[in-house]
Length: 531
Image 1 (tube, rainbow, N blue to C red):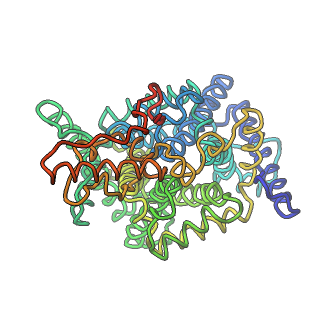
Image 2: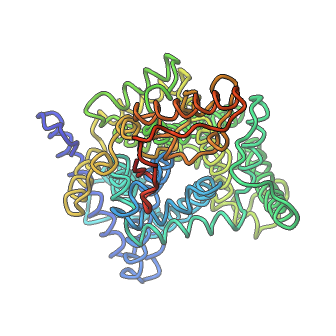
């Protein structure tokens, strides 16, 4: 249930969506118990149910974890070291170097594998019927996969995204989240989708912008191993793309017969672009959420987008976008699956004359999943992570945001709000601001926040042509304190003046006034400086 929205219309949406969710869950479990799904048809219904729920729960953690890891990236982890030790442990590695990008890469490929397990376990077979239900119910909920879409979206994705988007710290403060994080890091290490890094490099070069070097340049074996995985990923992607386009022009996919072949190709790339924008938008939205208004720039599209996301409906438009986005992405995936899944019978010639064994594997559609993962998901996420504000500064982002919020407004997946409210109540989640405040509050208190701002004061940038030794690389906690506390700023400026006078008169640096006690470091928390 959307927090703070209890009007009759919203309550009705919550009710009918929850009823649809319950009905879908009953149907899915009924099909598994009667051995009418892809995995249970061999007779192991209870094992199928176990795998189904294991995959759903893991999918929920992967989806929610992404919101937390990306959203917390700009915030210094020392702020929550004591209150959220597991979240701190994850952030300590995630915020180091390019580990966040590695996590996003592995996470996306992991999602595909988990969703495959969900569909394999709960997806109905073609001849599935249940409890003498009317034919129209079977067509709508079984044949189209509507029940699986609703259940997977609301239980395995949306409800955790809703909570994780506003309760980032609490959501990942557990060892299941820690295990999931390291699992995604390992998946990235395998290199199946490493070509996404090369695409990110190409985009930066085309934009005339130098990539941010988050780690020292790779050398020797590390460099060789990296580019070996890039080439390996590129080879798999190239083959998948060629074989898919060939199948489209040969008319050997599950695309509707009434759609011309050329239109199928255009639709394929068009839908992947839409999915890519939506994937990038969620990364950009979470990344910008913790920035100050000044850091969000002055582009009108970016400002309008931020106003809708963070200032309206008590901040609920951000999790609301996640619901509408998920519906849009799932719909696009459904059509892309039709476009890319090959359909070659035993008496037909294989696509491009490949072997029967390989053709049988391609008929499963995994090549389409790989293409979508690299070209319509991870690459866009990496670009959005590098330029979150720029990603918001386009009318396409604004229009897609409006569409997603409209779909969320229909209430078809409002059951996710209900599940999220129940989960939040049981787990005791609280908003991040309870623990670390807003970005503006952190700035005013001199608390660490890894934003892009720089302190514009003479003591740090040089005064009257004199540079104070070491202050350009001073600890960020000291620079934040100097920015937020006028007394500290004035004191540093006095030191700069004294230093300037001492240099010009040929003498040494004059000592501070006797009444000023020596500054001492309090120890422990590097956000505390005693004077």
